[in-house]
Structure formats: C-alpha cells, structure tokens
Length: 365
Ligand code: SF4
Image (cartoon, rainbow, N blue to C red; front, side):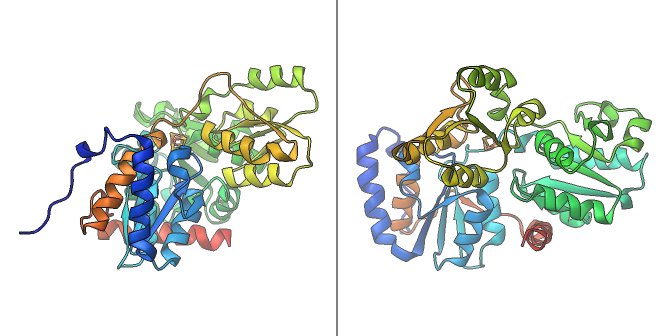
C-alpha cells in the first residue's frame, strides 16, 4: 500500500530545538535534490537553513538555475508561484505553510482588475494603457499583464519598467501597491497631479472621467500593512536626537516617508547601501523588522548603528507563519517520498505570466 503523507499535527507541538536537528538531518539526506530559499523577511529560526537568501525574484532565478528537484520557498504564496513559473519542468515549488500569503497581493484580484480594465475601456483607448503589476501579486494577474502587453516589476527595477511602459503607451495602470507606483513615478519627474488612485471598491474607481483622462498613471489603492506603520514623525524625532543619522526606506513606504528619507530602494539596495557605508554611521531603516534585526547583528562589529524606524513591532505576520515546525514537516515528508504543499500554477497562466516576467527581465538586464 502506498505510504501517505505525515500530517502537520504531528509537528506543531515539537520544540524549535528538535525541529532544528530534524531539518538539518532531512537536508543532509535530500542533498542536492533540495534547495531552500529564504526571503529577507523570514524569522531567524528558518532563515538559517536557507541555501540562498534574497528577494523573491533573485531567489526564484537561483533555484531555477540549480540542480535541485525540490524548491522549498520560505516566503509567501506569490513567491512560490514565481518559483514555479520560472522553474524547469522537472522541478517543483513547495511552500511550507499555505496560509503564508501577502496582504498587499490580496488587495488586487483578477475579478477586480478585469472590472477596472473594462471600466477604464469606456473612457480610454486601452491600446494606450500598459498594465504593470508589482511582483507581489497572484500569478493570474501576471498572466493578465502578459495578455494585455503589460509587464511585471520589482522594487529594484520599477523605474526601468515604467520607462519601458511610457515609451510604448501613454498611460499605466499600476497594481497592487500605490506607494511603489507613486514613489517611482514621482522620482521619474511625473507630478502628483498626473497620478490618480483607483478605489477598487467603487464604480470607476471613485474617479470622474476627466480625472482618468488627464492621469498618466492610475494607481491601484493597495498597500503593504507592514510598511504603512512607518510615519514621517518617526524620522523627525530620530533626526532631532541624531542629526547626523542617515534615513533609508523601502519604496512600499508612504510618499511622505520616502520624501523625508535620504535613500529609497529595495531590500537588496538597503543591504548594499548600509554595507558600503563608512564605519560608525548611524542608520534609521524603514522596512520589515526581521531584516533590520539581521542588519543590526551583521554590522554592529563595524561600529554601524542600525535602528528600526517605528516604535511599534512591524513584522510581516504572514512571513512569520513559516516556522521550523512547518519546514521540518515538508522536508521529512520529502525524505519519505511525499510531496506536501506543492504550488502549481495552471499551464495556461504560466505561459502568459512568463511573458510578462520575461519582458521585465529584458528591461532590467
Ligand atoms: S511585508 Fe508587506 S508586501 Fe511584503 S509579504 Fe508582508 S504584507 Fe506582503
């Protein structure tokens, strides 16, 4: 009789130390068949087992280039989808906890985006609108962009992607993160008056036809609940205390926070900028807590002082769901030949989503 998968209930009461040794042993047994990817925002107890760490796109590309058959993505759902889309046919992507989603990605779904596209089509010539989706979105939205001549972007290449889009068509529909869209477009010289926010819960996005006609970029009203916790007052108070401090923020932060920051960029950019800074510099960092704590540990020996921007704990609760218990569970099932929590994007979406991702990769090379 075929062996069945062991249930997660057998793992949830294990303590972290037990999980640690079981994960290490499963990794040893699986060897080069396995690659574990750890996003920057993962908790330390999981992050330490990552073969590769970084942002979601970089990790998926590294996994696809590896010999591994099993890609275990310690991240959130859309990341495992991207890993599956970019993987070779013999590889499979696995997400340790299926409840690890992204609240920002969930703010745009295909039904709402298609409705917006239809409603905009009653006012605009849609041959002149490029849909641009942040990589933090479902695979079917990436496929939507592939189908409509659109493209994917990351926080590292958003500006290059928007330049590409505006070189081809007059307007952009940008989803799901309004802040990344606004901060990037403003940095390219597009004034705020040429941007409108599409409220996806209201007919015509809550906008008048003239507002839509005169906008260059239509921003979906989505946001990251972690980054919206950072406020400009946090920066003001810190600079009163430490006038020489440097402020660095992720572009998912509000416009006001980004305007008050000395540096704005992706997680990879934040890491690189702090790494290359002089010793004894002091930094206030506006991004997720696990990454900031890791930077603090990594650079304290160089005399760099790294502070978290908010007095509140701003941790990504969905990233936090991936715990050592779930990691041990998926790995030990793999050892016994059972696949649990595979993420498989439907074939018809893979092709179109890949098209939108390939356009982005060409732009950002
Ligand atoms: S930090 Fe924000 S954007 Fe990133 S996964 Fe969490 S909710 Fe999504």
